[in-house]
Length: 149
Image (cartoon, rainbow, N blue to C red; front, side, top):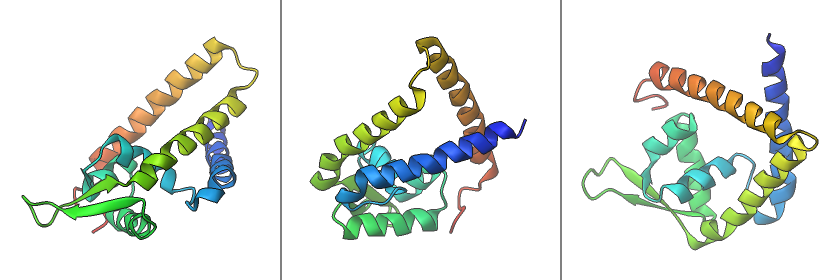
């Protein structure tokens, strides 16, 4: 039963290596891809919302965002309504990088599913989505609003 989790972890670690190799010329690390997706999909997302959506603690999100800002990928702005809230926006540099990140992800997905039928891919996707949804539900209930502060 636990072997599927071992396999998911192996796939995840190998995917990290894939992204590192594919994106090394763009001066980003493996862990930044999820930030790129989320920020580009939701310009103006707050740092706290971003941390919760990515299932990381606030201090990790803050460190990653500081690096992304220093590297010219994001702009952070304090909310005019609530000075405690910081909103994150993608820069042109991040928006230009997004297609490369998407391409690397698509190539990995194609590499992994080579030789699978469309039906197998559909079933695998549906099962993993159910597992991810259940895991996310747990994390959302288990973590307090101020986790990571």
